[in-house]
Length: 138
Image 1 (tube, rainbow, N blue to C red):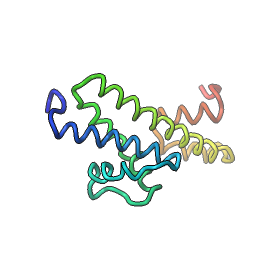
Image 2: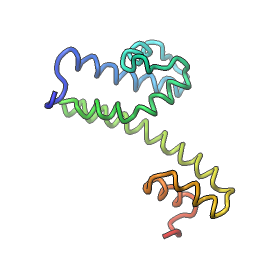
Image 3: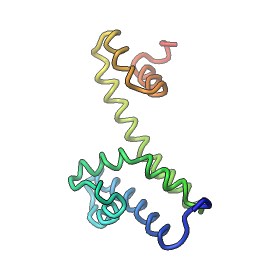
């Protein structure tokens, strides 16, 4: 396993990841997703959700697990392609969450904003402050 996945097990996991990406995208546009549900359920087992909105949230919440698995794929082209696909999905999620946070903070006073910002990482705080005030907070 040190040099990456091999054999039938690897092929199954890679197919499941591809199907999870397709499932996520299909659920976002209300497309046909039924053919991908089986892979999602097999990949997550007992953790799998049944409700569509919960499936989307569950996939988003499981991004680290998906990235770890993709990073262990030995074939570089496939590993990079899957990593790029996951990154494009999760960047969009983070941008939406960031917009929601900023929108929520716009009507708060300085002390309330400071209190809210404590729950986020330095990187996220920086992004929030940039959107709220531009680069003038330096």
